[in-house]
Length: 531
Image (cartoon, rainbow, N blue to C red; front, side):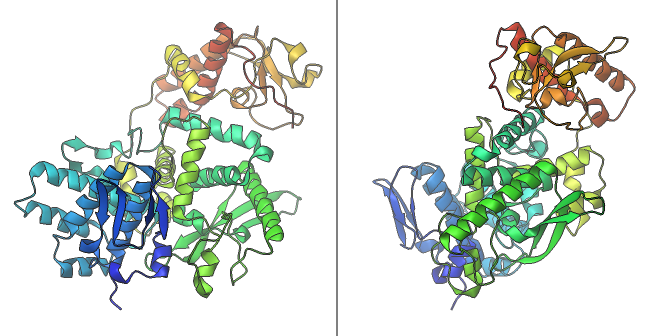
């Protein structure tokens, strides 16, 4: 059997996440096994010219078009199909076969670009549009973890100037839609995670999975393919001699080719909040398995991210282990819903969180060798882009900017109260939070609704904690002024940017308290029960 799109098998459909049928964004049913897909009176896709494509090139195109049909207008998907297939069919078949036999890196782009430039019927403008579509497709393939597609090539493509629109390292520095999360976006995401974790017992299974996926990807730079292969049994707890516990997760390492499979693990230590999310999710999974009589593959291994129903077409001793695993698109959809439900106002997906993770490590002073280990790269050249893109400019932050950022960054998560009489623990002197500025005495600024000692840095950690209950008449303006003064002092000393910015999130949170009190919105937060 020829290894091309025409001979696409069930196993290939599973590996490349190609559904047997789908419903477009406009509500039209499409049977993806047909040669011609009709999405409307003027929109159709004919796969005849793509049937000879090597499977490792044709199947990713088919999967991408499926995703576009579900997320975008039919005309957009049709135009993308034409640009990809129309360009690649101009590449000599033997060249496509040779490329598909190895790593699908920049060699495919160069072949595609050359074919367009050598065709007198393709205008310069059309060629640029086609190359832009190719770039989006290729980066998406890397994002979902298709075999053979190179993370390094995706970074190189994102750095290219195509059609006069220079992406440069904007994608890896400040692009608001594609690049690492900026300060405000990161603050919004942290606030959303904190709110979701605060009500973890009220989350449905899908919401809990989405929260766990976002936290894992943000904490360790994991692709969807990593998340997909994590099992319940990869979570471990070690009890030390003093009775304390250390929580771990074994992150799968992936092989480059063939059906995605684990080729070992990297053990990562978990923070208490993420460990709690995973433990809660495992308990939910166990209840579902007992209720449904198992939901385990032939090896008896259960996935951490588990579907409600089995995926169609997964048969045989290897594929049945994947029957209840989330697909790559499930992770993308879950993160999209997480953003929407928390009104974040920006896009979130595993690749973007991976860029954010890597960028933060570089900002914190890690070496190329340490970053390569964290990202599980075997070659240092693959991580140098993050060092080349590092900004040497210390972010500026003053009182006016802090007040402007405050309602957007959502750093303050607590509930403003009139005074101790309205506080959760108003009758407990130990709950009072105090601040000491330069040359001042300890000044009470609010109360803590937490029933136990959290052990965090009081009061700097308090303003970003959901249990913080600032008092209306407390000197929050003084707190803000002192924090900004200390920031300017560290900046004037020429300290590292991370030391200058270490309390920026707290500064923005205090600014939000000041803003709410000044605008008469004290107490507009939700009253929270103590833990």
